[in-house]
Image (cartoon, rainbow, N blue to C red):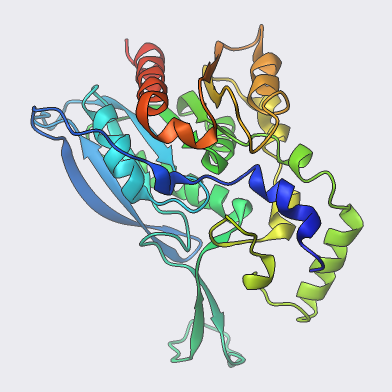
Length: 322
């Protein structure tokens, strides 16, 4: 796919080092109920968890929140640092591993040509199980599948949902909220929400050439080490990165939106991301912009983490509860 040296800056703007999350000790009260679940997204099995306050009656309904991790993250981080804390505030909460991350299935590539058939048939074939792929277009589908599973959960007010996402997950959360009327509130935390600006230096012609090479089998169907960049986990699909455009959904957002950014954000220009998103919502939907002291990763620890969590808890309580 050509030299990646010129792309490192673009890649950095969508990284979410959620492995840096440090959860505080749980409060002395009983922890929320937690249940591990499996759901499907385009034929892939994805793993998730559901958290509920203890002692709910069978007919008791609460608003829900879907949490979306970022680049290189997984639901285990969210299960420690966010889901129990939100459930204690009176929400049903769902976390999940995006495809090819955590405990979710990855992408499968058959090592041999499959036999022609006119109907469904059982086959035994050797396949490659491709992991750690960063493809935001597929991730949007995973988030949609997670929401579709979540709305049938008992004790959930299915038309009264919030979506929260961090870094790369912040853009995924935005697209999810813009596409589903059941979502009533959004929180994007240190979110890369303007991917076109981040990847503007990659010519469209170059990406078109990569697509032709992939279609003709001259490059692998999924990226590998050739697309990796120092400091970033996994293998970004640069074709998908170029096509992914959460900013195209700004005008479609119709729900109260909280934008949390790092005051000294070093991975992207926040004037082109969260601040621009906030300004685009003025006079149309309730929106709040807060810059928390520190750099990108400081949002996951110490005072930055505590402040951002409090802001999200208050936002969802204000806009999802009577």
